[in-house]
Amino acid sequence: MNARKLAAVAFAAALIATGAPAFAGQDAGIVRVRYADLDLSTATGARTLRHRIAMAMESACGSYAGTATSAGMSEADAITKCRAANAAAADQRVAAIVARAQLAAR
Image 1 (cartoon, rainbow, N blue to C red):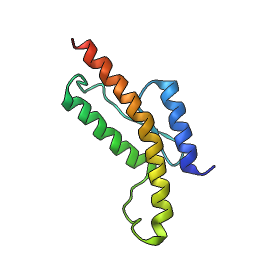
Image 2 (image 1 turned 60 degrees about the vertical axis):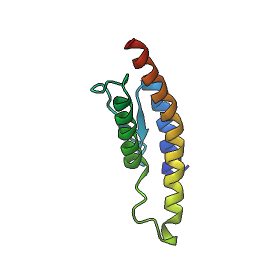
Image 3 (image 1 turned 135 degrees about the horizontal axis):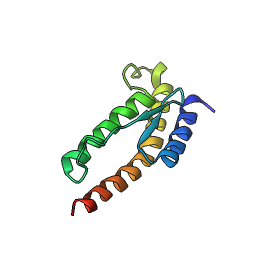
Image 4 (image 1 turned 135 degrees about the vertical axis):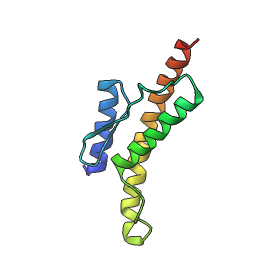
């Protein structure tokens, strides 16, 4: 299993185990996304959380910078797969967190 696949598996396990948005990096470490300082009942707070998650995914899965050449295409494909695997799990988790915050604000 390559490092990015292992990272995606570790990420999914971290979501289940910790209940907090996290991203598995290439070394199967965890990138935690902090949001306690955000008001997630607002559009601005939710947008800021999504931005932080996008930055965490770049940190965890890698950057597309330098992958425009044919030699970098396999790396770009691996980055895309890692981000897709993490994005699906993160989108569900963020939706639940934001919905809870909005309900609590009522």
